[in-house]
Image 1 (cartoon, rainbow, N blue to C red):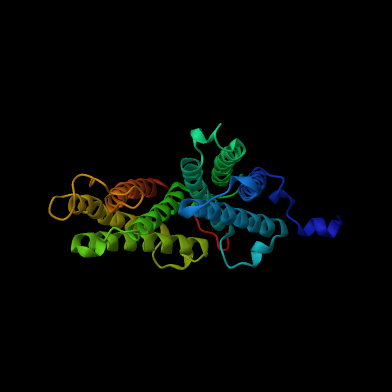
Image 2 (image 1 turned 180 degrees about the horizontal axis):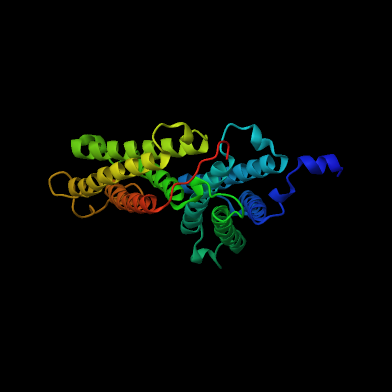
Amino acid sequence: MSASAGHHLNVSAVFSPTGAARVCQLMLGCTIVSLVIHSAGYSATYGTFCMAVWTSCFAVSAAVLVLDVTRLHVCLPVSWDNLTVTCASLAALLTLTASILYPVFFVRADDCPYNNCEVRNFRITVSVCSWAACVAYGTEVFLSRAKPGRGVSYMATAPGILKVAQIFVGCVIFVMLASGTDFTRHAATLYCAAVFGVCLSGAVLLVALVVSGRSGALRLPFERLAVIYTFAAVLLYVSAAVLWPVVCFDGKHGAPLRPQGCPRGKCSWDVKLAVAVMSFINLALYIADLVCSHRSRPVSQRPGV
């Protein structure tokens, strides 16, 4: 490699703790996809979701590493540090979900010795590698909070990471709402769905402002805007998290107990229960975000960083 080439390449993007975490992500992602295609296999909705998660995270990790090594990210109109930590946080949540779903639906103890033990062993290996990839993405998020000589980007702070988690849980809620909850039948459940949508849109908008590097252009300080939004979201989520189970599981509008003969995996009662649980989880995330935002010091947003 010539001196001029070395000058234009960012060697520290690979030979650094964060770079090492990204290289591990690529190696594990490539291993997972190869094993699944080779012998482990996947099928149905959950298998397709897991495969989509692994391939997407691998592609994003490859793009981030290439842009960082070649320094081409300076040409992008985004805050690079905020973008990378947002991608890493989201990838950690996605791979965590895939690491739970894949072994639950595809790894069974009774596959051996009656069936093909080789396929089961491949699937166990895929599950282990998926958990390792989740740790690698989490490590990148952790390392982004302790960069020597540099300020911590907003998305690497607790409020920023919590907003990514809120978006993830909000998307999960909407997927479940669309899978047969009949939430449009009652005004109360329609209100809950509207609350979920408004809070999800607000979190996405705030993250988009930070990642695009436009948060400093607001007349209102971004940290204050984030606190105001989070406080309003907490109030809305309290009403929705309480109202949803009251309406769905009372004797007038729903069923307090699970109906007998309700098919597993296609039971609307199960979906409604899952929405209730996820709404309380997201409420806890919003409350934690509000507490952390109130206690944290303002984070300076540098243009393009």
